[in-house]
Length: 611
Ligand SMILES: *[C@@H]1O[C@H](CO)[C@@H](O)[C@H](O)[C@H]1NC(C)=O
Ligand SMILES: *[C@@H]1O[C@H](CO)[C@@H](O)[C@H](O)[C@H]1NC(C)=O
Ligand SMILES: *[C@@H]1O[C@H](CO)[C@@H](O)[C@H](O)[C@H]1NC(C)=O
Image 1 (cartoon, rainbow, N blue to C red):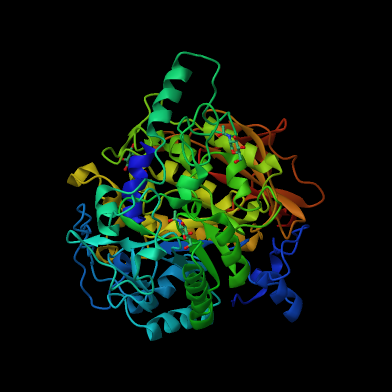
Image 2 (cartoon, rainbow, N blue to C red):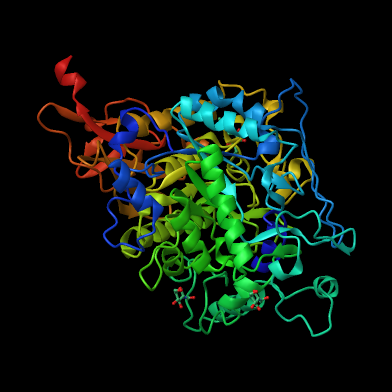
């Protein structure tokens, strides 16, 4: 099923300036890297030449938006949810709703009002469709979105506000090569010739057009293996998969799962095979390498990009990814839809002990998150886009999230746990958090508190704060396109409870300096989870208490073990979210919370004693 998903996704997926003490206070994950890669590492050079800590995403929080769907310049407030045309061999793309870069600039105060440090935008380069992951010209800005000057203005405006800019890039592919039934390379800049694309399995004498129309080898199809694997597990044959197995935290064969249970995984096919009809670039070709490097470094030069988000990482030759990471001199968060933690960690630093990417979007715990607090299983069978997902018959269960989170924190394999991007939803998966939590305020709060406080870089998808639902079944729509609706109809209200809550969580992070820094899972079970985070520049610990009760249980007493020892010497534990004193609820090594709201306990001066 995953493969089906990939084919479709892929169709759609088919510094810096951070001012003020809040940034200085965070430790740079990069500076603490004990091992070194290659001497041409620009990140390293920068820190040596300036004597300054280079910009790091560690400790920052990110707001993520789809350029075409976020904000218009005009006052048009009509809802828009268009689909691009990906009909096989037609590939007209499109799907534009009219959001622009200037529109984004006009809403930066709205975004900063929630306390976010950085903005991640979908690919701004000229592309065939509104999503931007199907580029037609790497060196132009999509005219639907604006101009090069608009991009410069956006970068400047963010930096003036002490915020940072994260730009999405795609190295793996360009737009589909067959358009309206014909091979069409002419308008692809700069890769306008068949030699730049993979041609594995092309028969002698076969034209490139025929090769493409026949369907070149796909990059990955784990579906048959996944079905066999599930059967084996059902038969209790001793095969383990799912969260308890750190090498296979999903009971599915996804990229990075190999061995006897997932024999279809072929790293060379992953690189050379096609994602649907998207033009799969051959990074062994010197021209492709050189142009890609100049594209990415050019973005840093032209727009002072602070960091990148890199699409479909596992489908690109990782040796080339390594080169790009070294050349750009800024951090990159890679998208790797994987569940094997060892494989995931090796995308940061490989078996040769060389750095590949500084950071990654954190998919393994994401796959557990909707189940943990809201009892939802994404996509039913993983990756089946014909379903939205289902609510688990046994309800919410935190165990899987606890397993994966503990395994990651304890594995010792990750170069930096501070550069794993945590999220509750995005533009590809099957449901938005407000939807999969059934608009239950308490459960959404628990989910968002996990995203904002788990170790890593929290990433919040636009519209979460406006209760966007992704228009699922209510209006009849399902699938990825539903996750990409317009935002302007919300009129950017700043008084929704989600807006207020995200603002509070960002403030909690800043006030108590819970940014980069260690975390420890203290306990978890089906119903709750307790973990700690380094705070106050690593001098102290904040305790996070989460449960998955529904809003009808909001006022129930909720007991968690362990909890911190009560404060001493004029100090007491306060809940950083509500500001309430909690010392009196720390009883016999546990927290007996008077309600079910998420709690973040920090040690502060005891106001009762001093008042
Ligand atoms: C990729 O390009 C290189 C250099 O041009 C070529 O030798 C190789 O066969 C190509 N690989 C595929 C799978 O097309
Ligand atoms: C997980 O990934 C590692 C590293 O790539 C690999 O050696 C191992 O076999 C994988 N495990 C499974 C169960 O696929
Ligand atoms: C409580 O949860 C239900 C769904 O179970 C939802 O319909 C309702 O709007 C929620 N109310 C609040 C205040 O969260």
